[in-house]
Length: 82
Image 1 (cartoon, one colour):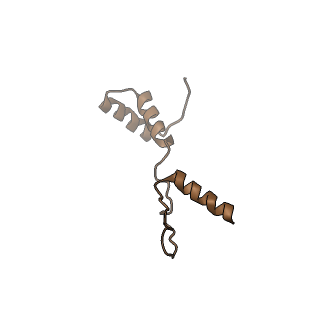
Image 2 (cartoon, one colour):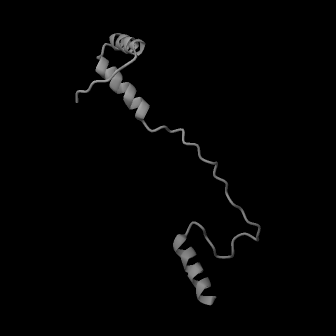
Image 3 (cartoon, helix red, strand yellow):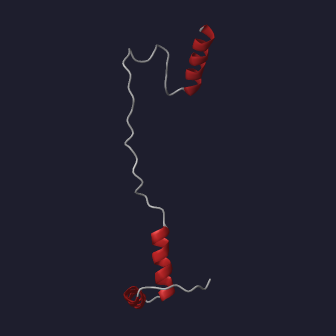
């Protein structure tokens, strides 16, 4: 697509110089700069994950956290008794 933009004279001079140094076109330099400027940043800060822990006596007998089917069965049995 063809469009017209107005650039600061110094910025245009620097962009043209960069194009010459890289052996590419002014258009390619501008496109690359826009892609970088508009790219999503990976610097989204998140709060560190904190594992919640509870006091107790540990797992009940017969509970295997690596066996989800057996765990669901135990929970269903508990719900049926309640």
